[in-house]
Image 1 (cartoon, rainbow, N blue to C red):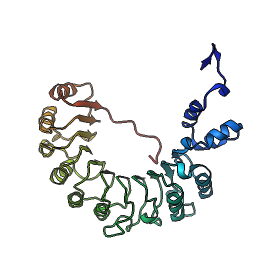
Image 2: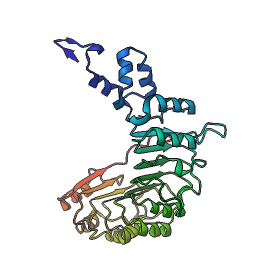
Image 3: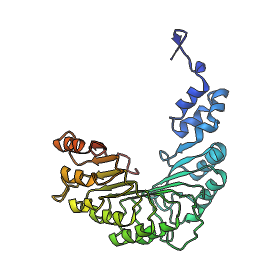
Image 4: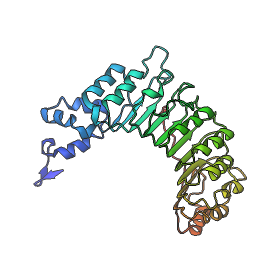
Length: 332
């Protein structure tokens, strides 16, 4: 950056620019910056800098987490990503109900909590902050009692979105327990291999108010998932699922879905029954509000199939892309 024709020093930068730069730094480096000078200490204390905190890069000891909570986050915090110690042995520190309750008491603006590799088997769901609107569980362990139907209906009254990614204990009973979250509008199931077709169908019947459903990498066939969607989720706006077990008749059950705006089909499992581009176009043309069709990992990018889809669906944004690269981070 140049000021008056010469290179500007750090001291020449306005607070707003420094805050923007600091926001890209890991939490540990942010804290260290507070020791540089009085001005940077004041900036590190700025409420804006602690709205969104990612602690998944660290094996965070409980006492360090408590210090960050009391010293920096508190009422400033809007979203938190936190890693656990699920695979670190029985003597490793674990997330505690007391810490979860403290998050709720000291962080009244916390809306988004994302937990990675955490053992929550001893953490009751009632201890989570009641202000949460989004809850993500990635490679976490939960108890059988966590989401069972018939529990306290006042728990997480504002929850709008729940992501359950590789939560091995999650099963039909837990899925049916989600029906007590009346504000729930988005549900993402990833690798939840214990959920059955019967359980999904029965649960979606009571979750008819969902507006977004993603079923990724599960043992459920795409056809059975779409049949359940067409029967029970007439107001759904976004559907995203892997194409395992997808056929042209299975896709055709979405014909006439009145509110569907975004349809995403993910590979790479392609079977002989996989609908052709022409069959996909035929089904999509019956969806009056469809705006986005995304096909990922099917090997069609740059091929005739992509051109056929774009030409056949001129009213849609057609996105054809390869699968994203696998993350090298084992906890993601």
